Image 1 (cartoon, rainbow, N blue to C red):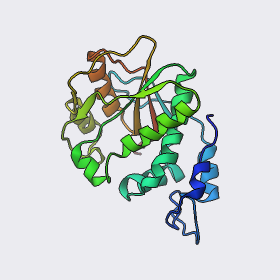
Image 2: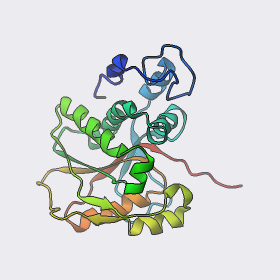
Image 3: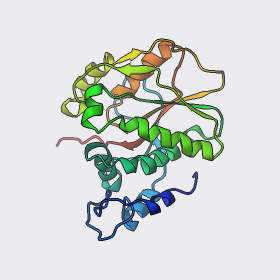
Image 4: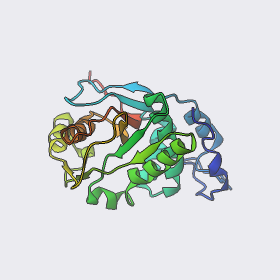
Length: 232
């Protein structure tokens, strides 16, 4: 673990509603109540894999399952505009990167881009804000880290409305390479960043685009992984 997680929240004046359990806490000065902080602090990153995994999907690591305080804090951040959560969530994402990569070698972080419409609906570039805090936490711990945005997102339907086949079809043409994109120095670990992995279609699609440009991702790091529900 990188250490020091959540300590910087003590000086933030946030809404009285805990972002992790939605309980009202009079005078609350943290994004989350102590119990939700404890639950998130107990999570340990590990490998995850959608079934079936789409072609081109790199190894994926997640902090935990998409549920409980982790789910609620992501919803509060993305859908309810609680921007101050970018810092603790970004630092949690740094924990995933550190666990996935293993050793503090050169790392290039590549956040999955939002479409302009999604950015407007989510109060701005939510993943970009998290990535900045993720990179800062890793650098503080001695990791040589850079951030690059080599692709842009083309307009596409909201993935929440799509099934697995629809996600794959939408992701297939979802990304375009930015001009001037080139390879990275030898020995650099390229890590894709996202908040949630569901079918893996988005991560696989952007991985294929990057690989064609000489930037093949070594792995993907996300905060949460959804669990497939089987119908009876």
